[in-house]
Image (cartoon, rainbow, N blue to C red; front, top):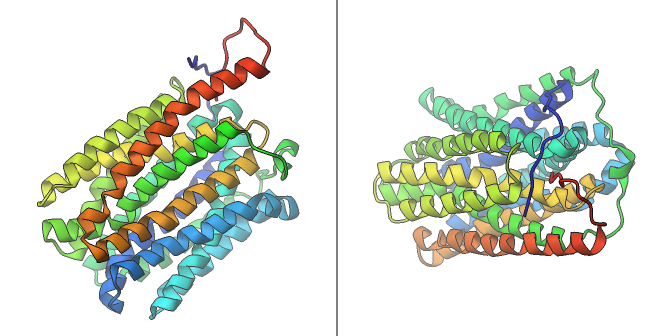
Amino acid sequence: MYRYTVASRFRRDRLTWVVYVVAGWFAYLQASPGLVVVHLRDELGLSYSVGGLHVAAFAAGSTAAGVVSARLERWLGRRWLLWSAVAVLGAGVIGLTAGRIAEVTVGSVLVMGVGGGLVLVTVQAVLADHHGELRTVALAEENVAASIAYLALTGALSLAAALQLGWRVALLASLVVPLVAWCSSQRVVIDAPPSSRVVGGRLPAVFWIAAAVLFCTTAAEWCVTAWGAAFVTAAAGVSANTAVALMAAYFGGVLVGRILGSRLASRHSPARLLAIALGITATGFAILWPSTAPAPASIGLSLMGIGLGNLFPMGVSLAVALAPGRSALASGRVVAMSSLAVVLAPLTVGTLADATSLKAGLGVVPVMVALAAAGLALIGPIRTRTQANSAPKTADAQTVP
């Protein structure tokens, strides 16, 4: 059984705030393919499958980034890696907004994914190393920043539509954010400690179980993120712009869930919070799936947001804690695993939707939630058994990151 303790008060210094801002900007752009694909399908006459390629392309780039990130950090250093990745992500945004054919827009989103994946790996490694045993709080708060960015994106897209400026303006305007963050970072140290420069070696088996749980939870999250607006359009019979606006209920739920999670993270283990979040997600899906009107769809999306919002930060915290001294390597691997889920899940739903219906395609969500719960149930006993076999018996309370 976990006994969760906190050794010191969590402190948000300049480095932490810079990283939060960059993480929020990344999240704003990470969520954009799933929301603008509704418009791209109208503009370019795309099928569900081709529309899903935009979300999958971002994830494919992030998967590749997660695999090579640890070596790139060793060659470039953490600071150069972070800002180089920011530049690549920004270049992809410009390509997406300039593209007028599917090949260009999908390719640009792939570039966004490479840059974004490297940004995410570096951000997570910085927070894990900088805050140590309080990494769960830092990662939860980072994801609160991401949730605020999701709401900002839906607001920006709705405002751009109301002003008849188009969705492209909402993406291009965000490029100001990394410039401000870069200027604010000149006097802070963004370097990796010696222990996180380890590139080789094997991660423990229990880490890979946690990574598999993260794969399943990320798949469930991105099924909703990528296809939630399209589902509401079809199920409730509303316009694309209205459906995007209704997604504010989902992203609002994500924000509420992550704020609660960041507060509870100092008193409860990530595994316990993950279990609660999975239950809330299942409840929300049970309301959303049969809905035929905007009101129940909004309620279901809101509950799913509360649950799904905590799955990624708590999953990352749990996985990184299972690989002590290897935060950069572990962060890279979990980003690769979660990004692979984002590649496969929207494409799977899109393919099923073309063959049957989008409602049937979203049946992937409860399957992923059930598999995640099964994996989570395995982690505690395996970790306890491993610690009993490898660690000396002590009378001290164990601190669980």
